[in-house]
Image 1 (cartoon, rainbow, N blue to C red):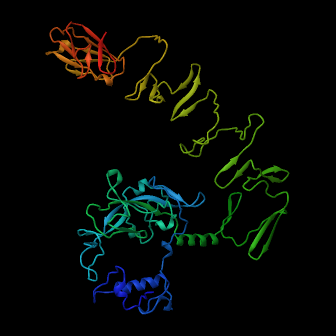
Image 2 (cartoon, rainbow, N blue to C red; image 1 turned 60 degrees about the vertical axis):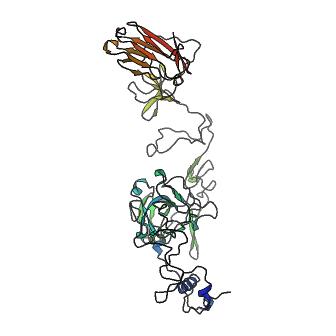
Image 3 (cartoon, one colour; image 1 turned 90 degrees about the vertical axis):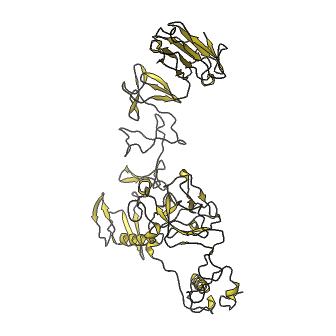
Length: 530
């Protein structure tokens, strides 16, 4: 065993930097003091072993900086600004947030300057230049906008809050609060925001960084100018601190509220008086037992809601219970197997928050008369013509996949094909095609059909270029018509893309006034005149 007071300890310590004579406390003296302090002992002599010290010592903490509520073991880094609690019944104490980092003035140096045992030795072990070695974590300028913390915009939960400036009243949660495996509490450090191309700096990086979760200080042993941390993600404590818990306990013990039918009787209680022939109170020391006589006792399983059942009696049933968060109701009515029969409207307390059913708890069937169901303000109802969606001026569409059924038409999402499949198709009414007029060189697009050439406006021959056949549908048609009646003066050349042909040719020319060319494609490489 090597004693901390061994005269040779100065020569056998592993990598402990010693300061030069006259420059202040040696690392040996500091190490001995810290070691004894962790064991609850004062350091009165460097020649004494810790078990020879008799004066106790301890690390002092303020109750306003000690976590007062439980920290959840399991947290997720999937979504920023998500809150977590230890269980459904426990308060929320943890929030996943993001920070930006500021270098700390006075921490710039070259950690490889000097030699072991000399003043200024910076404890570096990687090639490096001079640069800042300490950074402070700061809440972002959008924290109050993005946060779900109920305490945001109060105290130290504000935009651009420097963590260490809160003096322990804003702390990160360290991995020591998490499980031994699957622990997500470790700070994630980045060169920039990941969405802006930032790279993560892992704890195993050769720059050797550590974080103080109490004050939000990141220390870098070996400065690397190509990996300067500017962004981080971690978990902060948003629960109550011990002093708040103590204050709450003290206040509640001194101020009991007694109510009768919901109205306050008194807020300064020295005694409680239970009235009624069927109620008795007995005590054993400080424990008081209130007994309700037979006939007034609660009935049913634990959690059963009590109700008046007649003859001055109350009752309860397993078909109607409450566990503190959820109301359970079951039954099998004689007519429809109903558990709940309602005479009136069912209306949520707030709009657009609660659901009817869930993805894994779905209702079997929904029966609605000719009355209306509203979707985002648009009505779905039944009238004499059948199922009706929206009003005559409805702006919303009835959408199936990429197809939108509007008030006056069918619209497909861009780059999707509408297929109409039938043994035979019969239309009642006129049929209109999309028409485009051109008076100069034009590149046909796959959404064109009728292309009218205003040849009377031409001063030179013009070229119409067909789209690449593979961009079209097999069997797609195009109709090109001389609407100006003057192509004999300025011919119109219809040409195919390189690798495509028109009836085996690269191009055809429209030379007859008011002439037209009908084309269709195989959707591969050929166009045909028909």
